[in-house]
Amino acid sequence: MCECASRCLLIVVNTIFVIVAIICCIVGGFLAWNTQVVYTLLRDYLYPSLNGPASSEQTKTAIENMIKMLTPFGLAIFIVGIILLVLCCLGLVGACLNIRCLITVYLAIHGVLLIAELLVVIIYLSKPAIITDNAKQLLTDSVNNYVSINSSDVHSSILTLIMPSLNCCGVLNGSDFDQSTSFQRDYEYNGNKFVLKYPIPCCKLDSSRKPIDNCPVDFTAQNSNINQGCWTVMETELNRYGQIVAYVCLGVIGGQVLLIIAAMVLACKREKSAQY
Image 1 (cartoon, rainbow, N blue to C red):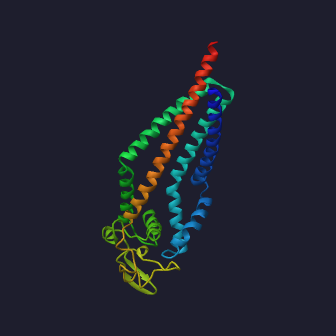
Image 2 (image 1 turned 90 degrees about the vertical axis):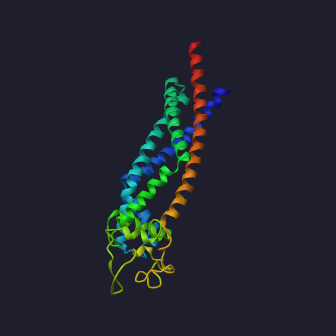
Image 3 (image 1 turned 180 degrees about the horizontal axis):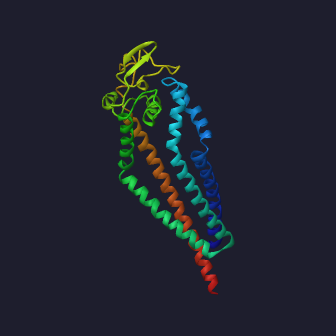
């Protein structure tokens, strides 16, 4: 009875994770190699946020730079999908055909993954600053290296995307751009030439995604986000989603423990059968 329940558990759960692994491979493959599909999806999702402060060409450049940043993550997701697919196939074949060596390999790989996952979750929950500090540094680097809304560099493209979407400006506030030595402040807007005090994406936008109330000619707290830094918003979101991911991982670890127990039951039963 116990052996039958263990075999059924392994077959059902591993079948589910085979489907998940295939999805990971598809998503990761698209992010890593089929950039046209990703571009179309991001364009449809992000265009309303970017179309106000940026032209269509600038929007295209911002999305292309974002895709370049996502490519390594796509490759990582693809590799995880392949590993998961191989692991689940070992468990399925081992459970269906009652092959002890496959079940043993399945147990060994699961054990290594379980230890690695536990270490990652414990480290994150005990010191989330490992993630948030790096994210803040990336944001600070983008602010310090910002050029202009017309620039195609990664830093400018990232801020052209982030600041209008989150209704923020700079890391802590708009004064952070005082340290941006590459910031091109000479700008022509509606036929008038003037010197920008802050980047144009710091402007608040109306319903048609255009800057309001004479921004960027004159930045005020009413027509711009110069008093609202991006890091406050980003840190809150990173911590919230980080906690969700960590607890989901703990749930997955719990499921892995059940699978390991089930696989051990099958391996022990198989060993006892071989002795008789």
